[in-house]
Structures are given as structure tokens and as C-alpha cells.
Amino acid sequence: MIDIDFDDPARDDVSLLLDEHLADMYATSPADSVHALDHSALSQPDITFWTARENGALLACGALKELPAGPDGAKEGELKSMRTAAAARGRGVAGLLLAAIVGEARRRGLSRLSLETGAEDYFAAARRLYVRHGFTECPPFADYVPDPNSVFMSLELPPVRFP
Image 1 (cartoon, helix red, strand yellow):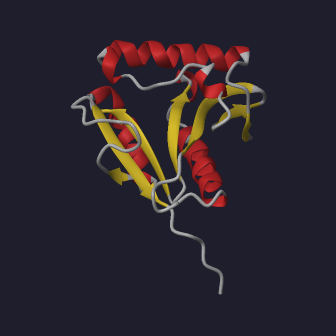
Image 2 (cartoon, rainbow, N blue to C red):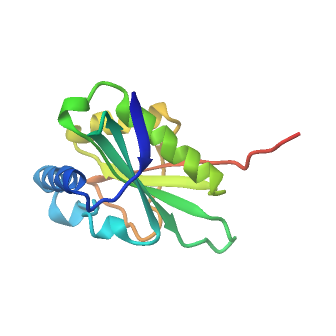
Image 3 (cartoon, rainbow, N blue to C red):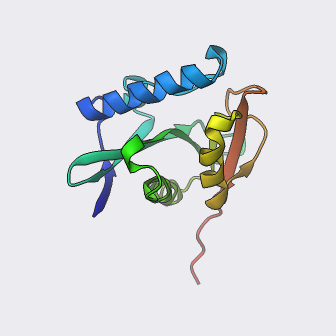
């Protein structure tokens, strides 16, 4: 059984996975196009961090960063640091983790969840995952600027209406 729960990005096994993530980002993208966060940045109060584990073994991680409210007061979030361990790829773990994060964003009343990922072929599987979960390409958001090495995507989260 895969357990998805809040976790500490500084935990030893998580920190190693995040180090691997950052190394891959710098190996596949120009340095000024790398927006991945390390474990200390992911420990900030505006970020909630999750892991997916099976029998205690780390399978994946991801985070939700709450963005400042827009001029209309709408609350938005950014998906950060999605990473699946090599041994767990192809098992649907990233989709389960993404669904949990989207669910939490909805519970918090966020109106949109956005993300930045790479434009290179290396990131094609990630982009397909996001599209399968309803994300569409969008212009840069928050403090991002147009970058040919980045793809920006967002998912609208309309309010849940009860009869």
C-alpha cells in the first residue's frame, strides 16, 4: 500500500532524492532556467511538503507553495519539486501524489494551481502527467518570466458548490 502524507524535506532519504532532483535539473537545463528548490527552501512556512512511501521506502515527493493573493483576492498555489525515485517510476505514484496535492489545494480554497517544468525532452513524461490531470499551458505566473527552457501550466480549481 502506498501512503501519501506530510513529511520533512530535510529527512535523510528525502534530502538525497531532492539532491538527485537538483542534479538532474542542472544537467538538463541551463542554470538560470532551474527553478527547483532544495530541502531548506522547501522547509519554508508557505510550503507544504508530501512524500509517497511504501512500507517506509520513499517513492516520491512533491510540494505546494501558497502564492500571495492576487489583486482580486484569489488564492493560488504552485506545485513544486515533484520527483519520483527511479525504482518507482511507471507505477502511477506521481499521479497519486499529484492528486493528493490537488485535493489539498481545493480544500484550502485555492482558485488555481500552477507549475513550471522544463521544455526539454527530459521533461516530456512530466508534462504528459500534468496534462492527464487537467493542467494546460499558460503564460508565466508569479515572478516567472518567459523562458524558452520552461513550460508553464495551470489547473483551474473552481469552488466546490453544494446543492
